[in-house]
Amino acid sequence: MAKKEKPTVNIVLPVYNEEQELAQSTVALVGFLRKHLTDFVWRVTIADNASTDKTLMVAKRLAAKDSRVTFVHLLQKGRGRAVKYVWMGGDDDYMAYMDIDLSTDLKHLPPLLHALERGFDIAIGSRNVRGARVYGRGLLRNITSKGYITLIKLFFWVHFTDAQCGFKAVTRRVVQELLPDIKDNVWFFDSELLIVGEKRGWRIYEEPVTWVDNPGSTVRVMRTAIGDLKGLWKLWMTRPWKGYHARH
Image (tube, rainbow, N blue to C red):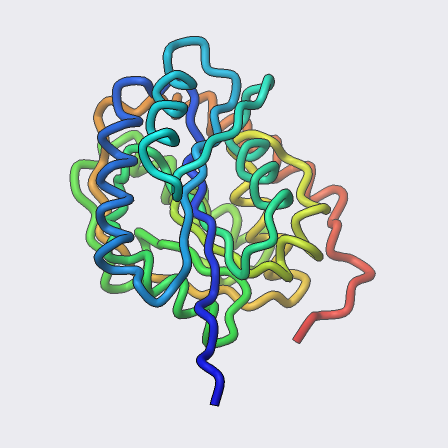
């Protein structure tokens, strides 16, 4: 009997002006993958979206040292844009992405991918599901995060519990059939993917994660919150899932 080929996965690190953290986080990720992701053929893609510091230089240096690390450089900013660009340009069985600060414990990556192998379409890390452990999140960030997911549930009647955790994986079929309809290129990308995905019948797995806040994060909470609220309003008005039959 022929030996079954290992599934492939591309893990994207979207970055903007992350010259300080990029090398350390990438080395840590690669070290983890070598040890704990042996049942997959994996690669890491650094997606630099219009950095103005030395991020691209660091990415090139990392890629030169390890053949399983590659990089792309986009001329426009936007985490969603960077993730979509790499995901849609690949042909791997699974695609993932995570925040460069590695706030989510890497031990949760294999369960995400194994969930996809079991038949789920989208797998996400959740800080709000039972069993999750969250450390160091400030009061403002906690209030905005909890309030945001409450709004999503009230207006869209979805079941997932965390739209904003930067730790997600999808199947190639999701990339081919759902991702072209996800319009946001910035921070609302995650929410739009999950809301439209669930509404269209794609199965979502939630992994309770251990998450440690990064005080040096470049995310601007209020600016991001305003963008998310605008995104929710647009989805509520357009309802892009209408007219689609549930996938399952």
